[in-house]
Image (tube, rainbow over all chains, first blue to last red; front, side):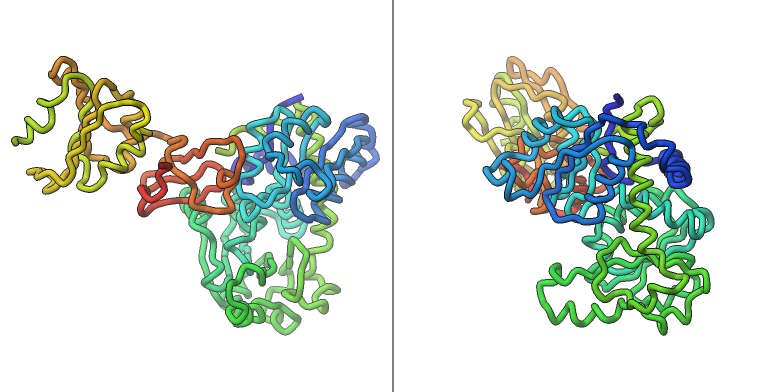
Length: 313
Length: 152
């Protein structure tokens, strides 16, 4: 077994991403062909924060590969409640499973945890930090809908605390993508992400109004503006409605515009969009299974994993 | 007292850190982890007149020769400092300050949501950038007032 981890999208080269997406496409086309590939493998799911899609799609992925899940359960029912450190929890659980999926409210939790375990560790979200496996399924969805070359993408909503945004922005720097970030000024990209985008020479522009850029977009990636992040409810109210899209909004968009959202949504995408050709967000969520199957397949089958993993700083 | 006397004449063996920006001497000690409990004899001159800097601080640590790693960490707060290793009252070595690639256990991450801010058995670690430092765990960048984040 290879002892590599998936901690951030920044650690993934274009070749890494393409390897996972290609494998995911093969699996999606013929899932029965891999139904026993990892019979007996155990995946530990450790979610210190709520999750529906990420947790269930990882569980579905390992089971569809013939493996099974050992689940830490809720924080309230685990030794974490007794004050056990994350480091100790991880050191114990690595003895129970062949790989660990970790979601944790603290930024850098996956990076730290990876320093204490030898089995592959997958970051399923670390606070406002990163969510690299979400990014892989985002990229899979974008590739299926629009391709990943010569791409103009708008990323809108909570860019400051949105970990899916941070990971997607990092990953897109390895493709021929023009990134437009649309948000209230108070929720613009954090300094660390801006630094990386600048260092990568990414084509980036920032906006406060979607209308400035909508007609040029191939993809619009919408995220929820998180009310709980605003210290003042009035400040939230000022911006929340500004970032809602409906049929009228999309009249200015290209007919082929693909609308993505990591979900859950609240009211930022009107339900009337759901039945249009623009809506890709439910397919995006479904893609979580083949993409995570591909990732687990590559990680558990060390010989095929290529360059995935390594030091994410 | 002349600058030369102040810098080298009062210490028999140890390290003299000179040309520290005025007011930064205590931060130099904090970065080096010198808090008096180690038993070293430490002398500090603060806001001493200097032709080059106007005002400077000087730190003398007796019977301890700083390693190159320790010296490099100083570059974060006192990039113009000079390090003199003293033996038998003579300067036997002048160490050069190089910015390290990273520093561990020296700075606290200001991000309260960083994993290093809790009770985990992990030392803080920062990558040193051309301008500022960056937490290896949560990726928060500190550019201004780095000394405010020194672990004391």
